[in-house]
Length: 100
Image 1: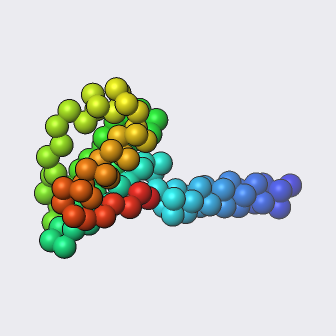
Image 2 (image 1 turned 180 degrees about the horizontal axis):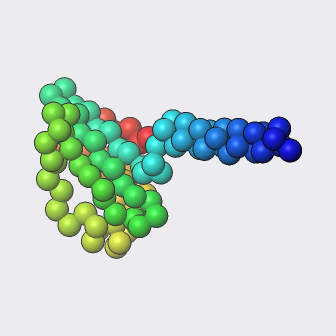
């Protein structure tokens, strides 16, 4: 009986460890958009479940100003907004964006 309880506890600990490692490797489910120029790197994170922007920061950690993002995402959808933002960034800033 003790062996069975010990195996059960080891199994629970193993499951918790596996799920923790999986979450650390895959992230929190957010869609990250990393846009790079010669001078700066901007990281924008989106929550696909609520279709909202979580954060937008420069490489040095300061906030990147984005206006009316959530309203635009509601209007055209998250994936279309990411494509639109990427296209505008590449045309206006001369950089490149990568979705993670």
